[in-house]
Image (tube, rainbow, N blue to C red):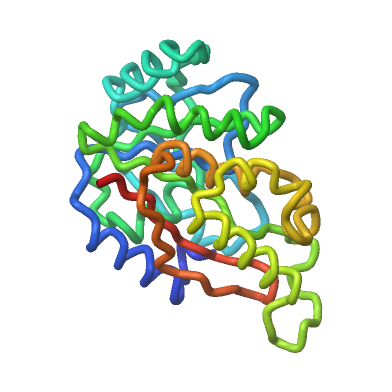
Amino acid sequence: MHALDPGAVGAAWRGLAAALPRPKAILVASAHWDTQSPMLTAMPNPDTFHDFYGFPEPLYRLRYPAPGSAELARQASLLLADEGIPTALENRRGLDHGVWSILLHMYPQANIPVVQVSLQTELGPAHHYRLGQALAPLAADQVLLIGSGQMTHNLREWGRNFDGQPAPYVVEFQAWVHERIVAREHHALMNYRDSAPHAVRAHPSDEHFLPLFFALGAGGNGAEPMRTYDAIEGSVLAMDVYTFTRN
């Protein structure tokens, strides 16, 4: 629903785009595409994939007609192959809402080429950190690498009564992650399910947290982390926005 009514986080996304150098292309790892091995969208004009049901009709009328880039997809595939990670190019699947619901606020003109890379949820955080590391050289070609997930994502608790306040477990988990990011303790983050407070409650499954590791890997230990937004919606959904900038 942020696509229709972005609220404060929409302003944060717009502000982030305004603060960043304008990219020549964008590559996004979204929580909503999971495959056995990495796949990359390679079609010239990817569709807007409405990968959900039961929402208001205006949401299904939204389109994000950004061009794709077969060249960027091939370049990314070669970088992953160099690291021993097999990939495939996808020419049918469109961009899912983990991509377009953010980009339509960041870059509403939809005139920057976009490629999406899939997750492999069963392979865990270390694998996605490695994906980010492998694709990090693209940043030198002015490609913006984005991990699109969520700091906490337990939809079973959406609408529970927390007296209108952030759920304490969400605040504790969010703070733990922030401390590890600022301290560049990437190994601790990759073992978050054993180390972080309320990890399983914050993420009953991994997929919405894995894009963070893609972004961490792309930035690397030398990147400067900055949190530009940290509000919690509906008591249980932490909407943190981070950048990892290499000097």
